[in-house]
Length: 315
Image 1: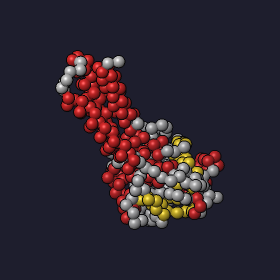
Image 2: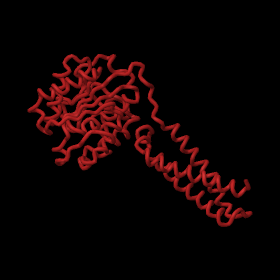
Image 3: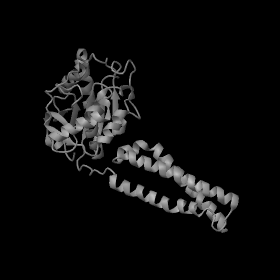
């Protein structure tokens, strides 16, 4: 095999590799968001590296195919095709090593049930904590009581792949069809539905709405959860944007590494995007406020109904 064929094959392989890098970044963008700090920069780096160096190698292929090997032919293309690409790929590797989210797996992972009245409640209230628990080995199960048709302008929001709950790593998300904004009139059947989920999952820890909340559905779910979980050892109440000043957290979870993950999970509720509390800066601000109370950068705060300490470890 002569030198020309070696060059042609080498640059062809390089084109395939760099195109694959760009396609990988596009296809697995959610994976990057979920597992890497400041993933937006890494995503741009992968796309730019893939596209630019694929074009450079493609241009070099064109000259090789049309003009062959000639001494001194566009030497800058050879330099551009080789050395900068090595630096770019090295930068990607170093960035991944420096920013990969690594959390020590819990020695005694627990089952967690999180109950929400509406499709976006889980992510907005406790998304960062749930993502952190999942990464620590906890099994997270979700129960949403309505499809949020009132708050979503009549369009129901089905659960399933691609939702924020799936992004956070829930094992199961069950969505029921109780009427939105009318849960106070159905506390008994709502309580029964929660009790059935508790019996099925057998969670060691339950998250639910607080009683200190202006939304009547949230109040109803709080009451129904306490009734259904009266024999549970650990029940925590999360904070929603409609929480009142009486919401006073006494337990905080450090979520410094999970702010962007929470924001991305919330973004999955596209129909709710115009609501101020869905804006990334407001999400970050609420986490910073609770973080300042807990003497850390970012935190989510929870009220405690009951908490057996062994039910919450390594988080």
